[in-house]
Amino acid sequence: MTVKTAGEVTAQGLRQPAGAGRGALLHGIATMTGSAASSQVGAALGAHAFAILGPAGVVAVRQFVAAAVLLPTVRPNLRRFTWAQWWPTLLLGLVFATMNLSLYTAIDRIGLGLAVTLEFLGPLAVALAGSRTRLDLLCAAGACVGVYVLVLPGPASDYLGVGLGLLAAGCWAAYILLNRLVGTRLPGLQAPAAATLVSALLYLPVAATLLAQGRLAGTAILYAIGAGILSSIVPYAADLVALRTVPARFFGVFMSLHPVLAALAGLVLLGQVLKPHEWLGIAIVVVTNALAVQAASAAEARHGATTRARTGREDHAGNRD
Image 1: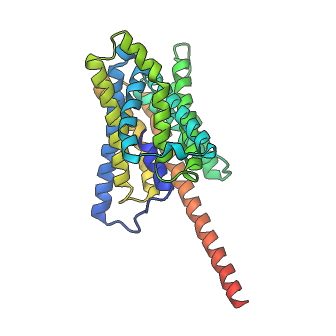
Image 2: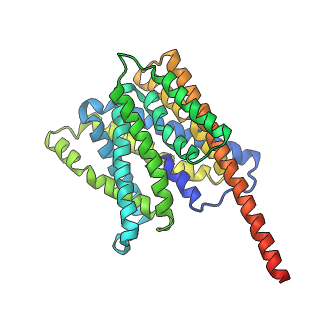
Image 3: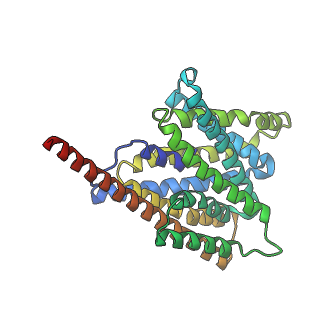
């Protein structure tokens, strides 16, 4: 689980601040910055364990850490789940497992900054889906340009790594859509907590294999646990706090900075030096994502205002009748 969960929880009903003061807003920005930095530092720590545990082993430990915290906190009543509640929850667990594995494998192959930037195409696609406005079409074109500049396809390109980053993006898009669905069928965080359990169970064979080989120990396991805490638990808690002091629209735009922080974490903690065209590609994707989120939020706000106005007119006409 990552910062994405907190954002979806907000969409499911967390009260948004009507007018946060300057101090509260600055506190929210500081909290979001810390959350984003924690997420990317956690990913960098996990990368230090790849040589021993492999990306799958790091993901397994991360899922165990998330389940160990979420399940006792949320306490989902699994026995009372109906099939209509279970099937999207099971799919959500499969998405968790695939998304994290594809992202971590991409990080191992093409680096943290590039992998996270490609992954952010997922929510960007959801924000642009079904829209036909000129700005949205420009954002879609900008995202394509950004990816091309970022990768600059050539004989030396790691197409498998790029493909895995795009798979992570597709999983993130599926995560958003599934979370919206289960949010209408299960209250609070019961579905994400149960999905985390499903994902953790899927990784039990990986953990058992590593344990039998004697690899699930030492510094590597500490790095993996650190990745679970910094990339799942800390961002989740911090984002819930931040969302009480900043508007959801601002939160969504601010998330666009994650690829930049991922590139910086890769540079400082992993020694991954990006080329100028890679920084340019990241910048294009970040700006495109921020514009798309802002436009989608504004459109949603206009639609809500129109719906309320129409309802008010109908109620007024009914009262006259």
